[in-house]
Length: 134
Image 1: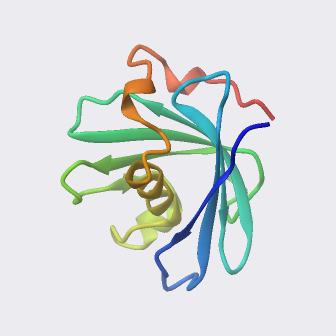
Image 2 (image 1 turned 30 degrees about the vertical axis):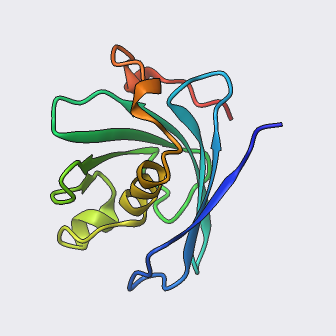
């Protein structure tokens, strides 16, 4: 049975209490199941870290549940190694004028807890064609 890790996320204007549940994939290194729980709802994502030429780490999050934006099927998140210029393709990040969103905060938690170590990532993997396991 896979281990699930839990971490509280920093409070945000839209959700003062948020947390993540992370279950690393036993079959696919550099991947796992992420649940983001906010005050309003919970959403589940299949996460794959992929190689990037930028100075940081990149993640592809495929939605397993509808979440707050039923029009989007997935998001791409970039966390800059220096702690600035993080990016997310979600509407919350775009409308927040560059303020961190729940996807960025979740990816930062994965990195800071070393739950998704970069040496496990296959740099040749094409994250856009990754099959969601659910």
